[in-house]
Length: 339
Image 1 (cartoon, rainbow, N blue to C red):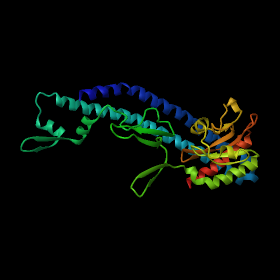
Image 2: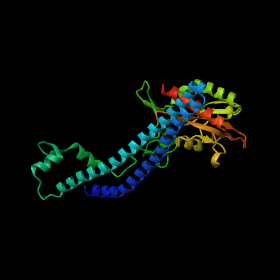
Image 3: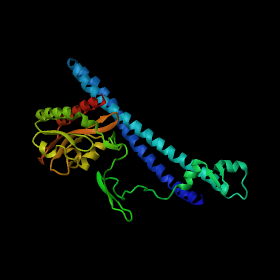
Image 4: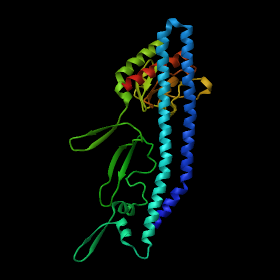
């Protein structure tokens, strides 16, 4: 009990840093939320101005602005959800630590009492079984679990430093037995999964990609975009290029996306090559194709992938038309996934 209190006190000492980091993250998201809210208001005002200037195109403009406003609203909903989660996390950190400290202090006081009373024993003991030669004292389940907890954080046979690996190999060793080798696909928190069972009763977890279900539609859309823009097009999920068209199709199709493109999607940002001194972003680290224009595919506040125009030419720059095509295609796929 005393050892656990020491460990809990050390955790409480780190609590302030954890709360500050959580609040900073919430403040950063709130700033982005304010920007998106302002952008949504500006878009609504621009819709009115454009319709007043071109009343003959009211229906077309209405459809375009509906898509743009729906995407912005989806981003806003996603950010509100993330801010709520951070708030819950902060409150949970405080509540759990306080509750644990109170429980352990009560338990510690009971253990150091010179004489226990009946009520004290009832707090700790579930039942006592009497045998001819001995007694068995059964503690309350939560106290028994508390006493059996250990310092070990990694109770599985996983080597350290593999948490961010897509695939890894684990060797389990034991005395006088042959080593067991396991090939493991590491799944990160928040990854959507499909669960299967085989005939022997084994459970199989497989990463699920909503974009993967859109393979045929994505391929047709990529072909249409490449013909319209006269430039190679790639449609990606969170891990790889699932559809491509144009001259570099064979070089990028089914390749894992680069970490730079993955980070770009995580930031939920549109990208234009050469704009505002943006750094070069490769489609995949295994080829020399660079992203010229890109728009993320956002469904129900989550990033599902992206639509991008790509080129091997170093001087190829983006323009507003390419970016609008990416955004329109991303919105189209987003709505198909949601359905």
